[in-house]
Length: 186
Image (cartoon, rainbow, N blue to C red):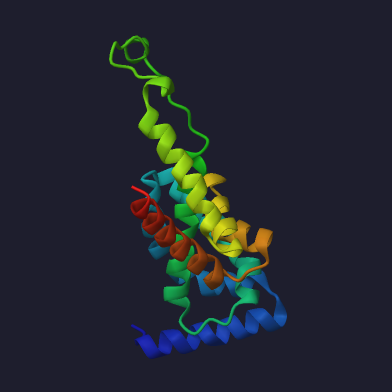
């Protein structure tokens, strides 16, 4: 049984060798001991055995390019985070593609309200639009892309030219500023 230090040392050696030789067999040797962990992460989020098996292989394919671009000091935790984010992005993209059939019983419900009957909703949308305009340009752009266009961080990075930390910061600060503005305006 390997100690944690031996595992980290072995991983660092394999990463360096992979980056130097660009040999997928070396990457496979690095990835292989973590496949059960990755499968478990995928199963936790995706809740489907076959989809999780596919995800384990897709994460390996993603690793081929991604690992070259990062300096990784603890491969196990980095790979865990990469896998979790992969699953969350997969779930998010699937959520945007699924349509649910609406039963006729709901459509014919007497309690169904139309937008004309909802002046508060229209007022809130109007306030939200005004508050969006008060944000600094980068915050406004990141918030629009993330919440309204449902783009992932990576897509926002590409669209704006900002790094990942800046994108996250602008979204978080923009959301907080919107909340403050909405509360201030009733």
